[in-house]
Length: 449
Image (cartoon, rainbow, N blue to C red; front, side, top):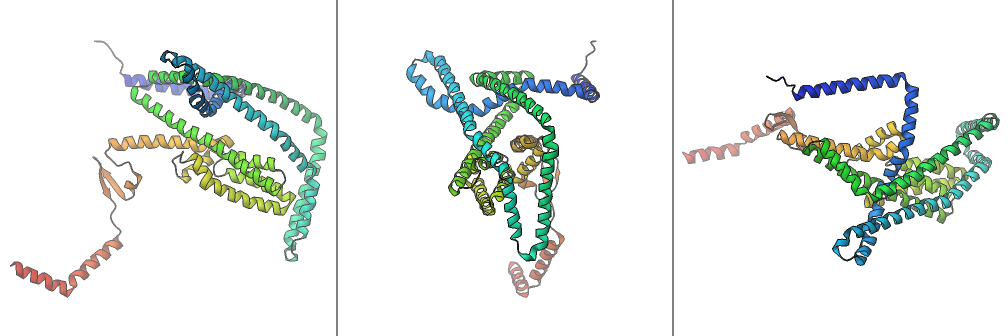
């Protein structure tokens, strides 16, 4: 008789071994934290261009599809009409589609930086050079406060003088004596900037290869999925990946387009009313608008403060404009571009933004909502599957009045409150005590007899 080990014991042993190995690795990472940080930095620097390349290819994929399907594929069909030339058509459409996509991306990036950076630099220089005049403007405004509010004005004047003196002291004692360290920091910043530029160039090159071979990469991923999991789980993983692609792709690309439109509208308004710093403030409003819910407030607060330093009226008018603009975005522009991509209530989206921002900062605030939407869909699918196995309804509304559930899907609802039951009993007693109804019931009984 052969001695056989059952699969469940092998699985339990593998899980126990994995737990022990993870515990040892965790203990090692705690004891050698500095060395682990060095290895982590090396790994992150090595993988950063690859990660950026895949992200860039994913974001540019809708543009590639537009060029490939609507422009170059019809041209290729016109040039190569025979069926045996289909591979040639595909190569032609893909190559020209990738080329035009990258040219458009580089034109937007380089042209945008060429137009924006000088104006942003001028705006920041103007803010620094005009700081004393802003201080005097604020003092005049405080002096114009009504005499009944002298205590409030006095506290504001003291606070403002203290902040101004602290800023001057910090400039004289910390900035000027440490110019050598600042220069060294700028030098290291230049080196870091060159590394960032190199990573960006590598990411562009990697994104070109990813876009050119996207079907092959997707097919390899499917093959690995079906080789590692059984058919049912593999199908579920692929359905989840398609859902995540639809949520993330639609949300991120839609948010970028929506924020670009908001920034342009803000710039047009500021140019019409001739407010100061139109480019700087429009960039702040447009970039922060990518963050759901909190983004408009994050961008509006520094923008309003900058304009308040220039002119109180401009700051107040711009604050009103931001409120109107965000209402327009939330009710018309956003739903038109994004639709209901997340398919979640506002409460869950708010929780996702807070949790994502708490753990991962600004990227967590941006991607927290679509990530939570995917988790929410996964949990809903698992819950629906388990409820169907137990012959229970999947709709949430069906459980509002549930008291308990028996085996076989038999549901018992909660009883009505005693006050309502007493009222029903009283109405029944009053009904029986009605003499006309008693007489009619007596005559009916006699007739039947």
